[in-house]
Length: 172
Image (cartoon, rainbow, N blue to C red):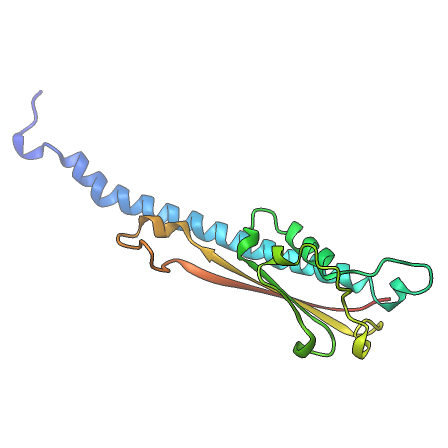
């Protein structure tokens, strides 16, 4: 049976009108899921890093104990707790109890890898049990959906900054 000439190409046109937007929506949903997974991973990593610091206060390095933490070990703990996160886009800030005037920044987190400065610092009694410490992390996430946006090129379309923060009380 032969089709009429007016019906040729209908399937192609229907796929173009329905299929391509549907594929775009599916890729967008997958991209959003990956972004939320990344946010959750960073938040969990910051929580783990803060718990790690909370168990290493002034009592940890007193006497014959030598378990004081350094900025490098804390930065490595936060970075290793976030698999799949680009370390060059992950910024970490360590804030002791005395506030932001004595904070330590690792922009990016890999820049603090070998830092042997003891943290939390003993100045102002920041490493005393009962004091709070905060760890903040910022991550710039670029959505892969920008690849499909016409003319996106060098623009910052699809870029989000994820923030994570954890506050813990020093236990020892």
